[in-house]
Length: 267
Image (cartoon, rainbow, N blue to C red; front, side):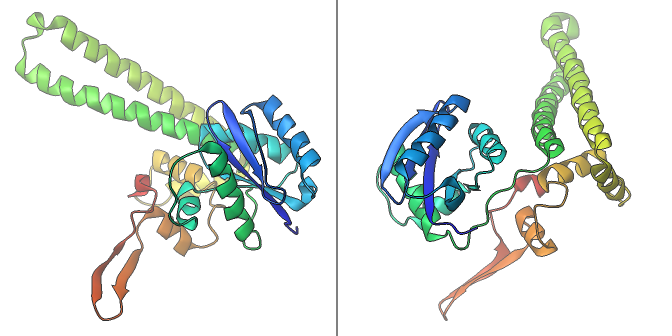
């Protein structure tokens, strides 16, 4: 695929601003299916190039970028979900904040790197269902841990009959959260069992000493079934366990250490 033009998109909760690099045209659309269709029509009307020669680029912004990613995939239109930090650092010193200006900057960033960029491919549906469930389980576990810690200390110090509501409500909350965690885990296990390849990966992971079912599910979700990384070095760097040197010339001799640019959930 030969990229001849780029469209930078700045996403927000309700709207998106798009900028066509070749013709310097900018417009605003709804962050919805209706808005995406209008975006493509607008591009065809205002760009010198077809959608097959154009790369749409936007920041990876979680839920806000989810719907447009699905739409572009269904339309077979090339797009890239770029890390916000990569875009920010490529632009040098900038002042102020404006969505339309940001869309222009994203289009410029993409155009400069158009020969080196690989279009984003969404993971299989099972992985896309697994990731938010994994995040939900993590939040529920944190909430339960908070209740357990406070309940344990209060139960040790306080007299139950004098603080019946305080202790009873926490007991019930812990039980409810435990039930919800099990429900989420059951759904995640069900998704794994539906996919033969994921089921095999899960079986291999849990056969490794020290890796339980939840760690295996987490690894499958965040490595997209071990398809996200080309080699073990990149995966190790993503996990934040690879040391990097910090030195320059004869004056800077910092200690070798791991980078903070990693998924902290792995460490």
